[in-house]
Each structure stands twice: as structure tokens, then as C-alpha cells.
Amino acid sequence: MNDINQKIVKASSAAPLNKGETKWILEFDSEDLAYGASYSVTIAKGSLFDDEGNEFQVSISLPHFKVEQKPTNPNNIIPPSINCGPNGRIGLLGKCQCDEGYAGDLCDKCDSSYARNEENKCEKIKAPEVVSPGQPVDADPNAIVISITPEGKQTIAEANFTVAIELSQQAYTNEGLIIDKLTNSDIIARAFVLQKLKAKKFIRPKSAASLDKKGLRWEFIFSKADMEADATYKFVQVKGVLYTSKGKIFSAPTIVPPIFTIEKVEDGYTVKCSQHGKINDGICVCNEGYTGDGCYDCDTNYEKTSQSSCIMKEIRKSDETLFITNEDSIWGTIFYCLGYLALGLSILYLINKYRKGRGTPKYESVEMATRNQPDEEEGIDIH
Image (cartoon, rainbow, N blue to C red; front, side, top):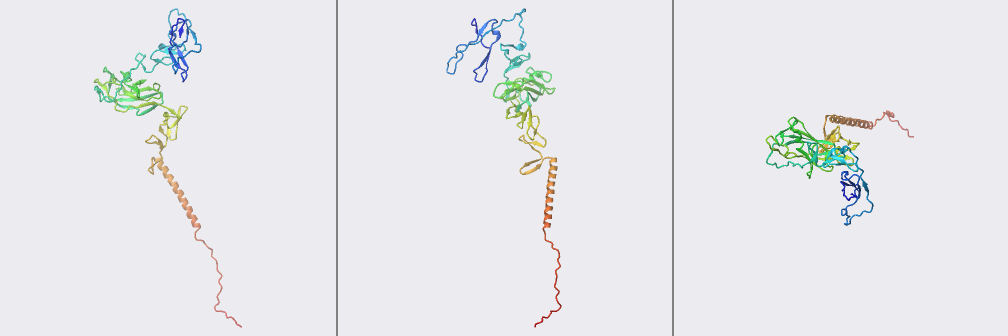
């Protein structure tokens, strides 16, 4: 914008309003404008060109602005911006313009690659040097992380998630101060971070707490909001933070660190439901045989196989053989067999009875009339 004295005021920010980037919104800082002055929007010559190298031309009248007179203040005190806090101010569009390193609608959050320091101010995060195999000369091979929970690949569904570790020995600062539950516990939060794979982007834990008095077991809480949706992160140890009592640094972990990603939703099935259920009003409705908030567990009368699938316990077929897996199913099978045996015996009894009914026919005794034979033959007269 130009005022009547041809003073140029550049836009403090610009953002596209559509995917084709043909519509833009410009924001100007009110502190760059003189109160009571008038300004007109112009396009700087030699700044916009099309694909053929032709410079853009203005075919419409661009808007004009006049800045109202600044209200008088008898004490010459400019009150701070209440809405944007101490780290921002309200722009011409009514939105907060945050100072460097701050973000959020009220400038109350740290921008990406910034973190709170001891004075609660947002400062630039220096990319930490991650401990990797092939230990430096000053590393103690016996000072290591001996366990990390969880293990393997993890998909984050909740807003916050935890990672627990156990150290092989007591940890100290580079100044020789002990790190335990009561003293210097904030140091441990800088010793372990999430690193984006194939990138030098790190996420610090929101908090770290000791699970024992000696400070051998620790729990870290990370926020899903700090992670990118399509990115993968691994839990890593930062070099030069943890030392032994003899002044040597901790060696790299000898165990495989866990990997974290944010859950994705595909066709209603989510990793939160472990691909064995669907989300309905934010709750997993599990498939048959599965149960639990995330459908990870097997329901009653089901058991988990080596492929993490749930199958029925009663009878599991393997190599053409039936194996009974619990006492209840044994008795059930016995009664089942007895029922079939009784049915078979009943059928045999009916068949036998039927055959007997169709056996050798019985005849009633009949008296046969016999002709009396004469004691001597009667003579026949021949005439």
C-alpha cells in the first residue's frame, strides 16, 4: 500500500484462499501505518508474471483505506494487547500477529522448532545429536538403557502417550550432579526425544517423571498434537546429556527403539480398533471373537493365535486331529458323544424290531378231513 506521500507499506502476511491460488488474503501490520493517513492498494511493478512471462495488469480499481486517528491517552501509555497476550498483537483483520517463536490463536503456544525454556519463553530448539551405535571413546559401555516400553511399532490414537525406560546405573549431569526423582529431573527430559524418520526434526516430551527414588526408571509423556499425521517417529537418546559418576557419557541403547505413527481411518476401520472393529460414535464395535476398548483382546471362549487372531477355544483343528483345549469343552464333548451313542442305539433297536416283525410267517393249524380206509376192499359186482 502507498500513502499520499508515496510511503510503501508491505503486507506482513499473505495466504491463498483457494486451491488454485488465484485468490489471496493480505494482512498489514497496524503499527506500520500512520494514524490519520490514507492508503491505496497497489501492485509493485515487476513482481507478478504469468506462465508466458507477461506482467500482470490491474483492470479494476483497487481499494483505498484511511486509518482513524489514534485515541488520545493523557498518560501516554499504550495498554498491552489483552487478547493476544504479551507475545502478540491484534492485526487489522482482528487476528493475533504473534512474535517470532510463538503461535496459536492467542499467541500462547510455541511455534514449530521452538520450545519453552526455564524462563517459560519460546526459544529455538537446537537439533540434538543422537547417540548411535559405534560408541565414542568417552562412552561407558556399561551405562546404557536396558529396557524401553512399549516395543515395536505403535499407532497413536489418544491425545497423549507414554514411553518408559530403565537405566543400567545412576545418571549424572555433565557437571557431576546426580539425576534422580528429587534433583535435576528436568535434565532427563532433554535426554530422550522422538525423531522423525529420515529428518532432523525432534519432539521433546511434555513431561518426565521418575518411577523410583534412585532415578533408574523413568516415564515420558508425549503429545500426539506435536506429531505430523503422515510421519513416523522413533524414540532416540540424545548424546551428551547423561553421564556416569566417572564423567563418561551413556552409550547408545542396545535394544531396538519403538516406532510411533498416528492412527489412520480407512473404510471405517481404524488402527485404534486393531483392524478388528469399526468406530461408532468414537467407540470401537468389535468383530465376533474380539473385545476391549481397541478390540485387541479375545472374547470369552476365544484365544489368540501367533498371528494375533482370535479363534474359538472349544475345538481347534490341526493336522486333521481334534484337540480339546479346556475342561469345559471336554465334558461338552463327552455329553455330545453320549447323545449320538444313545441315538444310534435307538435306531438299531427299531431296525431289529422291524426285522422281527417281517420274519418266518406263522400259520394257524387246520384240521385236515381224512377219509376212513376200509379194513378190506369192497367187491365190485360185475354183471
